[in-house]
Amino acid sequence: MEQPVNRGGLVILLTFAVAYILALMPLYDGLRSFRPEWVSLVLIYWCMTIPHRVGVFSGWMAGIILDVVYGALIGQYALALAIIAFLSYKLQNRLHLYPILQQSLIIMLLIALSQMIILWIKGLTGTAPHTVSYWLPSISSTIIWPLVYAILSHIRRAFGIV
Image (cartoon, rainbow, N blue to C red; front, side, top):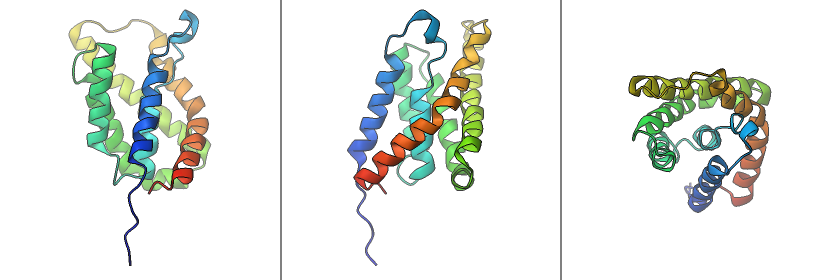
């Protein structure tokens, strides 16, 4: 039996590029707190659907890029996204069985865990935020997950990414 050709590597990179653009796009001050964790959402999707191509190393690299882009301590986003990628990989079989709303709740937990890791590192360096609005991206990411899932699923089918 022939192995399917791995296609769509460029498309996967482009989805990450769009996620970075959305993460960096300027927003009105009142909406900035509600910005979803776009890179984390894209990473979770690809780790769920094609874990043999996007995994912990991809999460680590995506995090390093976020560290550089945000001017953060090198490694804090890398650690958080690598852990998110690992957990997405371990939960991928179960996540596919859950309805999209239940997936959204698990996404909220994964994003909140990522934020907790980053908060812990910022606390160690003395730059931790002292407001409840720090946790709003996990809620907005939960709300936007069904749309992200639908768009990336359509892209995956359209380009035959396996």
